[in-house]
Image (cartoon, protein in one colour):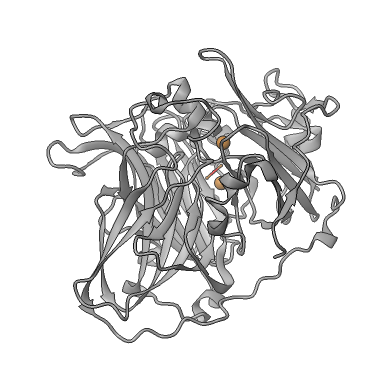
Amino acid sequence: MEDLKFLNQAIPDISDSRRRFIGLAAGGMALSAFDAWGAASTHGAGMSLSPEPSAAFNPDVELELTAAHGTQQLLPGAPTRLWQFTGKVLKGNPNALTTLPGSSFPVIRVRNQQRVRIFFKNELPEESIVHWHGLHIVQKMDGHPMYAIAPGQRFVYEFVVDNRAGTYWFHPHPHGRTGVQVYRGLTGLFIVDDDEDERAGLPSGEFERAWVLQDRRFDAGNQIVYSGNPMDMMMGFTGDRILVNGRPDHVERVAATAYRVRLLNGSNSRFYKLAWADGRPLTVIGADGGLLERPVDKPYVMLAPAERVELWLDFSSEKLGTERVLRSLSFSGGTMGMGMGMGPGMRGNGGLANGAEFDVLKVRVDRSGAKARPLPTRLSSISWPRIEEAVNRNAPRTIRLGMGMGMGMGMGMGMGGTTLNDRTFDMTGVAQDEIVRLGTTEVWEFVNVSGPMSHPMHVHNLQFRVIERLQDRRMASVYDTMRAGLVDEGWKDVVIVMPGERVRVLMRFTDYTGLYLYHCHILEHEDSGMMRNYQVQS
Ligand code: C2O
Ligand code: CU
Ligand code: CU
């Protein structure tokens, strides 16, 4: 990738000519564009598009997945009430659904091109739907909030896994309630395997681990606290306890050998700047969409909400009893920081601001291990889309990320449009300039004009390539706290857009038509309307 470019110019003012909207759902108008996939529901209708399995679909793997109340002993004293996914395998490989050791998180593990059926049962007291984050998937199976089902209902997912090997994940996606449902505990990993990944010969079995990073606030009775007050919605909700795989004070016991570790940032809004406390570099081998072409060492790794990274950690030369601490280092331009004129008193009761420094976990080398195989210099081959293929290479589709805080509750967020707060979420709505053609490659440019916050921008249904970061020179001191940790070398479905930055990504729209989402993955921003549909049209 070419070097980062600095723009001398300021970000232009938001004064495009007024854009037209089509397909506003509020009046039930303009639905004809969506007839092809039969959607006509709005939020809360619980349309149960797929209540029954289809006889024509013969799955390789059939699972049951239930979202329900549960409890976990997380802290000394009272158990903590959570919402949890539980599940079981009904047909196929019994290891297609396991539980992440020590946690309540399910891990679905399948191979590329397998046919999967999942009976999702909603036993929560409110509507929900499951989204398979990162999967290239037929629109009806993507877990769009328009398909949210009511308590007691079920949704039958049937799809062909169509992703290269990688660490994907799943979480609820009902409109306006994603943040609180994920926060209460609804998170799972969706790992895809394939031949190419296996050929890399990376550590596997017990030498492969996964760490889901989250933060929570607990009250005196050990119950998790979530507040949707305007400041938390604006800045993103952060907790002051760091959980790894659902538990505080995580210690990972390892042998003196090499490990493949998959990390997911499953936090609502916290960014991590991961680094070993002793300063040695991290060896990155994978990103959101699977293995990189070759390993790359970084002094630290930035991991925004919903991002994944895979690391190769070699403890072969450690003495038994050695402990190594993985920390999150300080940075600016997260959800707190410069420019907002906010003192510590404005941090809510979280106490641990985004960008503050803290320990994430401890690794303890407690037994000897086999000599590690050397890490291959070539991990995978990727056929990248090229800028020359893009139908709009001279005029990127621009998505402006703005945030405005009015007085009191008057907070508005939106993307694109003529003013910062012009566009918010509309269940089945899509604007004229949000329609793309099936079979094309496009450049999208996310422009962060929201002030001092970074936004992790996510696009459903595909993996993209980060091709360029055009940066506002005035923000260089902020970028310097994060840029060496950005993993732009691999397939991505979430990209950090730092303050004042214009990040260009290349994406191909293949196989499936219909409405898909793009949004900020700070869940409080998503829930506040920093989310839109785009439509793939044939
Ligand atoms: Cu992980 Cu639309 O989200
Ligand atoms: Cu997603
Ligand atoms: Cu955001």
